Length: 76
Image (cartoon, rainbow, N blue to C red; front, side, top):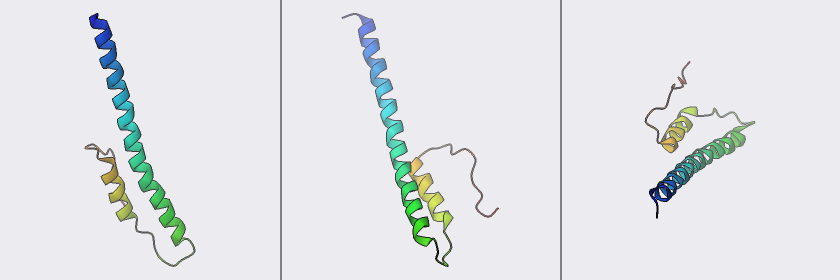
């Protein structure tokens, strides 16, 4: 077999794995966002405040990213 076949196979594998990792990360984040939406829906019409801090922490944990970009200041 020629080296270009191996290079093509390795490139395809790398692309396939990178797409899979993105899909997994989006799946993890979408689970947290769905839970947040359910939580907010359950509190609508009640006198209870929404605790955003816990949801920001859960979202950060599900993302597993070293560089989170700009941080949200919940106090401001």
